[in-house]
Length: 105
Image 1 (cartoon, rainbow, N blue to C red):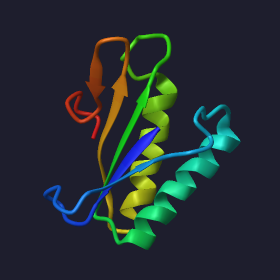
Image 2 (cartoon, rainbow, N blue to C red):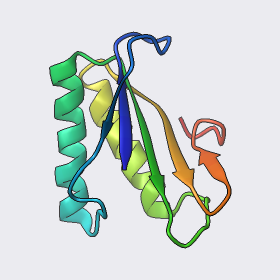
Image 3 (cartoon, one colour):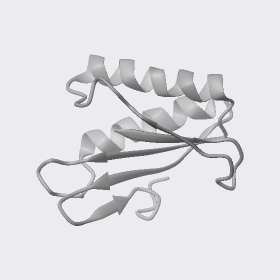
Image 4 (cartoon, one colour):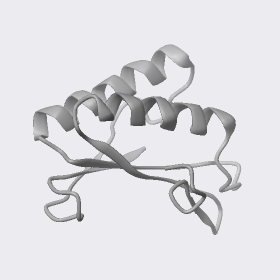
């Protein structure tokens, strides 16, 4: 999982951070812990926006149902700190899907 934190709403001042463990988020408890850390980092950095990205080892770049649920929950939590999820990118073998382009964000 990669995430980028922005300091203004037009993508200026971006800071990129590669999320280290867990590299694979497996299970609801791990996802909750990881996403709580995303929100805490955004708050500590004073971020205006978050960009998430991850790959599907299957090679299928279509977001899964759990991707949509997690993104929606993270977006709601981000709104509470006046931050927004700008996009969530899902990479497959040779494709990339943007949840923003799908109209989900």
